[in-house]
Length: 279
Image (cartoon, rainbow, N blue to C red):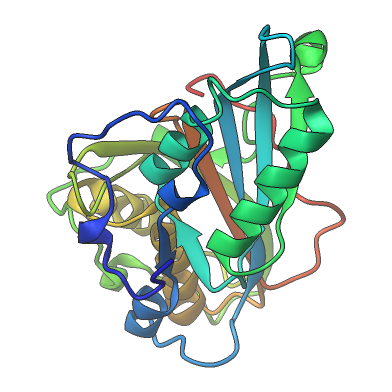
């Protein structure tokens, strides 16, 4: 795989032949470094975190030819060298559709090997089989809803100058939530819809400015991971919180959703992956 290949050369926005037999070469990695350098991140990361992928359309054949189905959860550390373009992951997963495998262990071995190579480092994978579908729950992000604010908006590109905090006042701890985050695929310009949670400790962030800032991504082109990292770094730099966590839960496209989170403080546990109403 050529890890320097630009996103414009990916399968996104192009006619694709859907392969029914296993083919790991369909995966298309994209280096994180270029977009991070635009944010001034060139050495150590100012955050840790995870990209939590949920793939709802996985099917293969058992050795007797009977179709099997599952949901896969991919836990991709934020320090992997690459992301993987989501349509290429869809095409890769579809390549299992007519592939006969000895069982879920055989499937997991292939997924673990191929995806770790594509992301450039080891990732974690969990399969939820159909017998366990009923155990999956839904939940909403907790926090104060920014969308309650009656604001006037005229800016639909990200503008960090909208971010302000009361730096002379005592620090606060807040969780703020909005369902109004929308960005666009940088290749196809198709809309990507998300809910976002911002958990911070520090000077009180001006909520109207923060909501306008988030709405400002409405015409912005960027992959999910890049958008979340931009939001994290710009809030960190402009508002000066001592602790910050940003979590975005994007709606699925092509049977896949990507939910990045970034934090600079230790969480008691990883944020819940329970899907929300729009997922």
